[in-house]
Each structure stands twice: as structure tokens, then as C-alpha cells.
Image 1 (cartoon, one colour):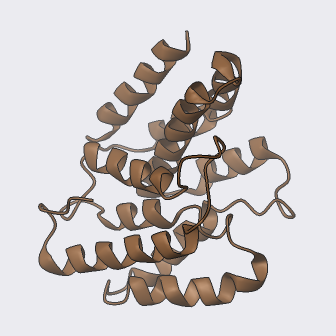
Image 2 (cartoon, rainbow, N blue to C red):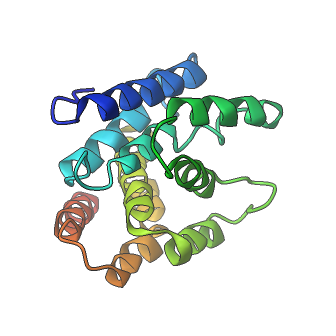
Length: 195
């Protein structure tokens, strides 16, 4: 990923979290059975950069984007080891290390605790701060686009999946941030594709 606009310290930290994500997602594939899983968090992080998240404005959200699926895709018995590695990757983000870890955990759906996807989405919509909400929306958009490309899934499955994210989109109304226009524009573009 290109971090030319990121200061030197943040650039190294971004490299560390990307490396951590690559290590833990190694060998995992997306639903198409071909695409390396790491392409998904990479796309989510790139979308956040496109929405003007970066070194001067909630850059830690890009860190969360890289790591947002790590707990979901890692066996529970390895979660403590993963947690330590994430904290080591973000070491030096004074006061934000635990915030980052908690954001990653919030976005990680534990099916044994939250078997209902709709309830999980509503919970995030209610409690997430703006940068974390943006990560989840980018995740939803990227997954929707993946469903569209998935052979046999078609627009119906993609539209159903996207519609389940509506509480996230509505939750943007809780915030006053100039980046919301870019996010809504992306949401609207996906709606057009799904029609």
C-alpha cells in the first residue's frame, strides 16, 4: 500500500499492521476460492484513504481496516497470541493502542455471542465512533462488491447483504464530519449498481 502521505512514524506502524494482517491471513481465500483474503482488508483500507482518513485525520482507522477480520478468521485458541501481536504492531500510538484493539474486537463478530447478523450490525451502528463506523461501512461495501463478482451469487444476494447494512448508513447522521459526503457518495454509487 502507498503511504507516501503518511509521516515516517505512522508509515512504519502501518507497515507493521499490514505485515501482521498478511501473516495471519496467509493461506486464507475469499469466498470465490481464488482471491487471497488479504485483498479484502487492503481494499477496505484503500477505501478509507479515498474518504480522506489518513495521518492528519483518524489515521488509526486505516490500522483497524487492515485488522478488522483477524479475530473472525483466526481460531479462538490463538486470539491471545493475535492480540499481543496487534498491540505490538501499533506500539507507539500513544494512548490509542487499546482504542485500536477494542475497535478491532467490536468489528469482529463472534457467532457464538452474536449469531444474528442484523443484531450485530445494529449494535455497531449504535456504539461505534465515526472512524470505526466508516471501517464497517467500507467493509460492507467491499463485501457487497465481492458478492456481485461471485459467480452464481448475483445482484439479489448482493442487494440483500447491502440492505442489511442500512443501520450503519443511517448512523452516519449522528456525526458532523466533512468526510461523510464522500462515504454517502460511495454508498449511493453501490445502490445504483444494485438496481
